[in-house]
Length: 610
Image (cartoon, rainbow, N blue to C red):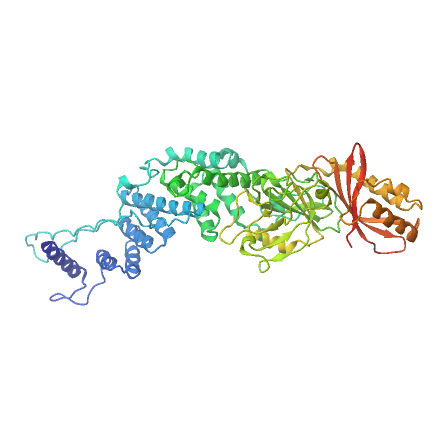
């Protein structure tokens, strides 16, 4: 051992003299250190655990030797040791390109990407595991052999100094200890690119890469035209609001489908850097890292090496991927509205519609005389789906509701994230059907998550905190109806014309009966089981008689008429309007629930909202 140290010291002194770093007999001003001397100084600092001080020396060496693979490799290892993983990956990749195929650069690049993938999978699963250090298994380039100093006169060539011992790899891991998914990459990238694209696009997303490739890029949004057609969701959202995490994830999908794997990796890397809690993005990022290493076996398969990475943990992320991609591939057709929106007055500026089984929430606004989708947001619903019937059944209710208030993050706990918009469940229709439970809200998610799994709530509708902040800012309580459907069917407004006319005729029959001095004709429109939560039919009869005595047959008009389908199948209607007496400019806002039983439409609940 002592002999080896003596040889190493002699060699180091020779190298320093050669580089001009130590004075020698007859020498003038010391010359600038050579690249090899820079490396020796940097490695000495590394040996003393002074990586931060060594980094500038590695960087200077790269500047002195641009494109030199060994210099790039050493800089990559140094960056990885300091936690600057993306830059390390870029340096290894650059070294590989400058001297392709440079074995060490390639091995380090593959190993680093495998390590980064493990970190991404741990983040995706939120396993709480601390994966091995990102520089595990990376190797320094071999130390160069020093070149002897030239002599002015021909002399016998001196025996070369002993080569220094190569420093051991940084936390090197033997092949036998490597995870099962670390396999030797193939030299021909095209051999694995095609199956990888199929794995990411087909297994993960439920659509082929070719289908993605045919989809045109999203253009810059434009204002909705004044014609009878409305633009799709992706064109209606203002440009400054479209660079949201989901849009960026969709761009990753699109790049994968088009075969631009390197650009997809860059986009995913940028996304998880900005949104580290976006678990699905972390999963896709991990897969792309494995794809670049040539060892991907399928969507999320690398997570099997992370504690808790079993199939049941991956399934919710797979479903989330399909739900998000499906919404992007199949936006509402232009010029269509959900079948539940029979008539919406312009006084109601916005309406929220939820497609439960597709994990989607839409906001529609009146623009240029038509309803236009202005937001399409991913949303999680109850663990057991939709169709709430009993308290604690872990289902999200179906029907039409009002937003009853607004709660910001200071008024709710961390579980509700950015805040909440409580809904009016159970409403009169729910009570009529003996549905129980309460406290159904639109709300955000916990701080440690970007979004929840598609079916994961206790019955509420859960959005990402940025999306929830948008709803809290834009939606008006008691002025914004919320329609929750099992599956939204988007149709042309013309398709709804017949049902809309029939609903308007019902309200008109009520208006005409209201102006009759005999209240019996009006009472015939009410169900025997009438109940508005405060009054039964007998009490309501007295109320109607009192109104008739007070106003008689006075002419009245119904304004701001809104008609919504309150039940799948069209057997219940949610109707709101203002009743304005002749000579008045304002009237009470009334809410009626109509139901059809045995072919007859009857009012089973009615009340004055204001």
